[in-house]
Length: 364
Image 1: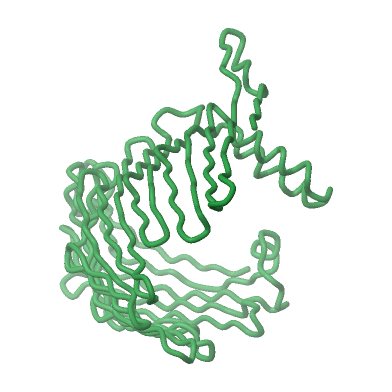
Image 2: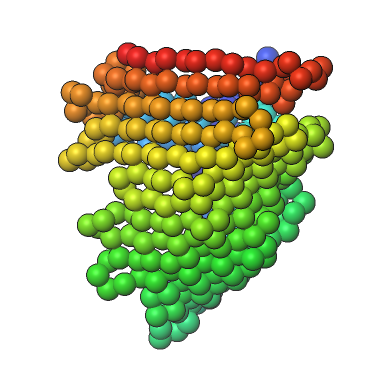
């Protein structure tokens, strides 16, 4: 079975592309129930596949589907895969599959995997988006006769390696790994779950900026109470060779579906240190947003620098939120006061008088 697509043969006035192609073949051995099949994609555009799907949809859904089709136009597929089974066991192999943006350099994903009924091996997954690169290998093993699962994940992101191992046994998900990573989740019979999430000095690098973070938290979820969480420690620090202010943020707090309370917030850099607290209140009635309130108060224990925020957003008509009602039906009231905020954080020329003092009133 073969499909050829000539939609994108003529790239421009000087370029002629090879036609897209999908080739499918297979075999069945009588008396053994053994089936094998293979499929190959060559230079096939995602746009062509989705445009074919559109022809099968009702008119109203087809019209809504056009935005997805237009978005998919630059993306091209290539790869091959194989599958076989005797209805007692299965095996599959995807030597390579490439998904790329034909209009942008260094925007592509590559995947290679294989497996059977008890194991999955992700030999390689590469994602490139401009200067960002992400490489992954992984394996998953399913224990025969049980619901137990074991897995290994290795990631390299912007030249930083991460290694994680985990398991799911007796309704307990357990993950451990580099940088003090520890995740434990207990799934209860009453459809609730609870657990902990920890990591320490976890690095993330993007565009030559390094973010170092630490977290010590616990959480719980039930249908009646919704999500609940406690953060015993959260720290975030930026390290950028192009800047020297070394910003650092830390807080402790807790939250529920009704809002969050940050009991202690500390922000510091080379110019000052701000300490304070915050309350965030969220009200939802019958699954409709009702109101949001934010109160933030931070000040320097050594300087006159201070930030105060008192903001509320309400939905008096109890309308469902969408792009129209967000801008036309919500009401906002609030005040933001900033005192002696150092602008040396953002200016090239430093001066002790580079300060911002402002009061902003919002209503409408």
